[in-house]
Image (cartoon, rainbow, N blue to C red; front, side, top):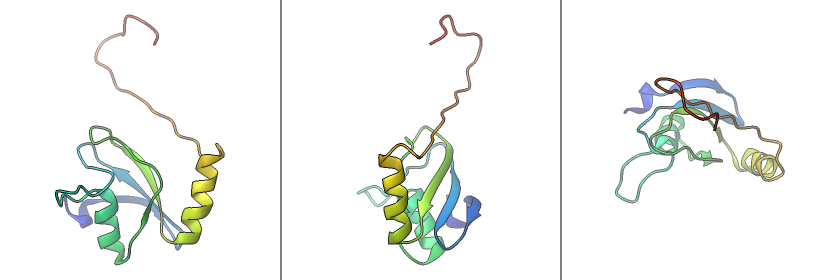
Length: 99
């Protein structure tokens, strides 16, 4: 995946909101494989701040801080429960149990 292939939903001076495709890491790997944070940082020409993660096999919306001030505010919001995350799953057929 290239940095130009990323779907950015919203961007301003403080945050970037992007769709992480299934199969892409959230963080850069020690092997040199770029994750979404590395691709977005390359695109922006500066380091962005990772606030949360999604597993490689999960796709979804992620939010990144574009500066240290925003990273601090959003990290506090996450720690104090003011950051809402919702997970949806697609299934094939009808599950036997509700959970």
